[in-house]
Image (tube, rainbow, N blue to C red; front, side, top):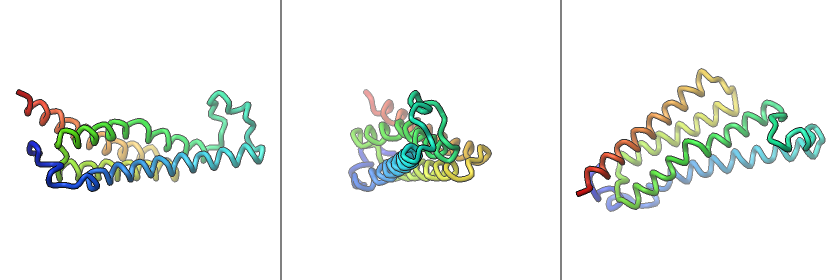
Length: 150
């Protein structure tokens, strides 16, 4: 990434598109979780006293969606912060955008595995890919910012 080359040659819309996809994924998972939970409470399949203190007394399929939703509030927070900082410092370039899409695709795959088979042998490596890509993004950003300091 060259200094000041990123945002000047790339639209903010292109840079924010992966963020928007991640945000939509997060909302879908939370709305899906809410639908399951409300349906189960209204049908009296789950009693409010059994979950009032966040006890994991939901059926497994509801816990899978809930866990996938809550995972979107963990690692992606660092992605959101990095994207904002990359825009502000004009460090978002083609490499940044490519890595951002890889990260978001890994989050989509991770959520898919989480709400379907939930196989740890698949979910773990998919999470690892996202973690590695985001770590690389942060490392590049830190080096570029520090290199640009007087």
